[in-house]
Amino acid sequence: MNLKNKVALVTGGGTGIGRAACIALAERGTAVAVNYSRSRSDAEETAQIINRNGGRAIAIQADVSQDQEVRKMVDRLVQQFGTIDLLVNNASITRHIPLHDLEAVTEEVWDELYDVNVKGMYYCARAVAPFMKNNKQGAIVNLGSIAGQTGLGSSLPYAVSKAAVHGLTKSLARALAPDIRVNCVVPGAVETRWWAGREEQMKKLAPNLLLQRIAAPEDIAKFICAALEQEAMTGQIITVDSGQTLSS
Figure (cartoon, rainbow, N blue to C red):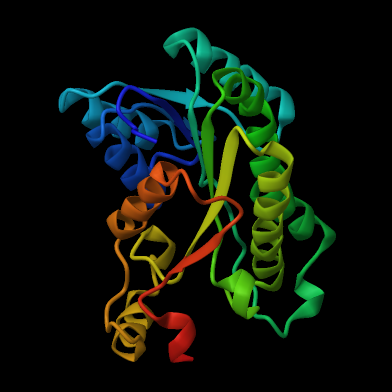
């Protein structure tokens, strides 16, 4: 799919991988809706960067864990741009809880992470699907994590929620074929504000990776665009991790 003159929604688009994806899409001629839940200033800044450089972007608020907010966001986006062709399901949250501390993983933590990381991606895919089907083409990329492959990560519920995202990708690929392709990009460690306060830990990790570098958000964004463009691929879970899963 040629991304020029297409319309994309990027959830959690204000910072990190989301911002990089928004900018990469805009560079390819895509009109971008930068979704945010609470980070309004970050999302508006992302949209301003794109607009200053000759692209088209708007910041648009919705809590992806709330189905009605998602539907209203998509309706507003379609009113603004006429349709929607692309979805990047990037919005995710975590809690930092040692894996061995099972008692710290409360029902609230499970619900919070699943509501955003899994149900939120489903709600967004469901909301955009009718417009993509009407166009007879569309593409969705979900953001997974190597935590969902290895079982390691910031917390047990986070790792499990990302494993669920990988499964959701395959099920949606079946459910939405042949008009809509659904794939999952699986980052390893990425140099984002997620590492705030743990920069030394990140620096120690890099030399132990096969490529001896932590991926930048722009690395992941390039591959998101490639997955959106690739018309012969659906239901795939693709790891972009500087060799991290082979290094452990």
